[in-house]
Length: 369
Image (cartoon, rainbow, N blue to C red; front, side, top):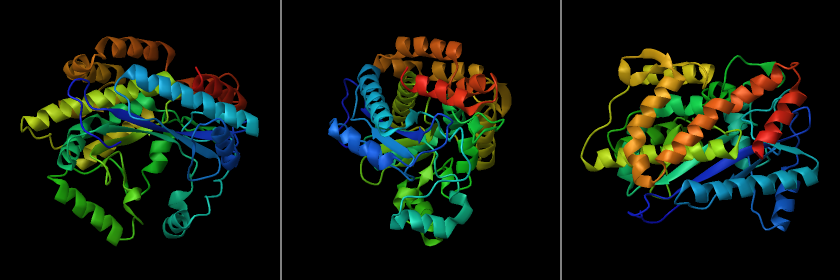
């Protein structure tokens, strides 16, 4: 994700999506090496993840929602086909719908360090997120963009929540993944940073305290890349459909464009208290798209997720129009409100008989919708 900004089209962006390999009852299957091999034979690169029941796909840089969508749909089709050939079902779900107990970590020194050092914190290893990368002109810009994005992280989470059913249980949360992921000492909403040096000091403290092994374990919901001038937004569950992923990534891109405009005018992001932001993230994980959230910018007022989404859309409209995406985003949001997101799909399938096979079938269909 390196390179210069293109003033005509806006910053390029790309997506990483993680998927589960399961049987028809939602139990994780340790088949990722076979799936990766079969995909490679088709000329498609998949990546191994933390456990052998996961695979990851990564797009190239894209300049529009159309270009990004073509890549995501193609990668999902190839991954699902390779999984089917290996005897597994590929599902875009943030946690396993069925099974019991965590699967084994891949046998690398890095993952062994995590397990030995952090113990049961690592127990839900098979969790799948969606990471959006957006180009920025400098690392200092990435830090300030992170500050501007902080108040909207709970809404991003509610929009993409996709882990309501976990190992045969209705968790009563739209994103149980986020609740479990928050146990990691280097995860959750990032602090407010004055500058890149402030960011670096926080990372150094995490490393020296033994909370992290390396910079790759900076798992904050937003982080600056150590290799490229990009900002990476990591708050989301992997969305159920390709359309949801493209919509979410395009909104994130517009949010970065809006933040960069403020940064270039010399404006500073509002200082959202850490305790308020963490509470808002928990509320978003609990409530999801169909519930109520904390409106951080409006004195902590409780509003519907849909209302807050409308506020965000109005805020992003100039950036979306600049990118030529506003009309498309409005249409996609209407579709999402009508059809529901991943957590809603899971709960709808679960309520038909509390059967994880029904949830898997719904997720498998949505993954390739």
